[in-house]
Length: 73
View 1 (cartoon, rainbow, N blue to C red):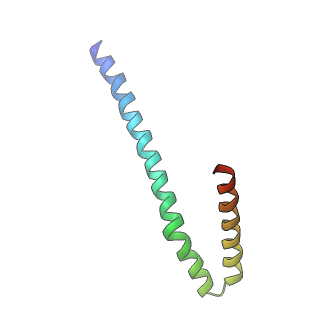
View 2 (view 1 turned 135 degrees about the vertical axis):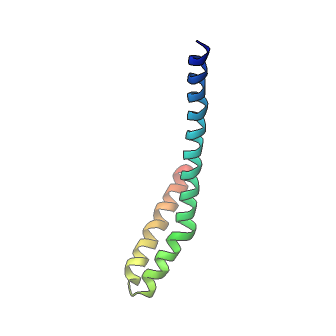
View 3 (view 1 turned 60 degrees about the horizontal axis):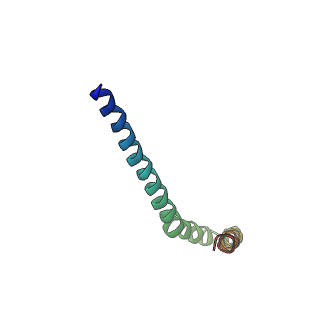
């Protein structure tokens, strides 16, 4: 009986730790994409002659960020 209780509580504790790890990993990946990867992609697009596409993408992301900031904050 104690073994069953131990196993159940172990799954609860490690389940919560796993959920916290997934939330932290998702937050870190969002930061990496928005701070590192997106500017590199935009610069590469501008250097390879896709400036019009990069500009449209940049304006779209800017509008989404602006509207999201107005709604949330």
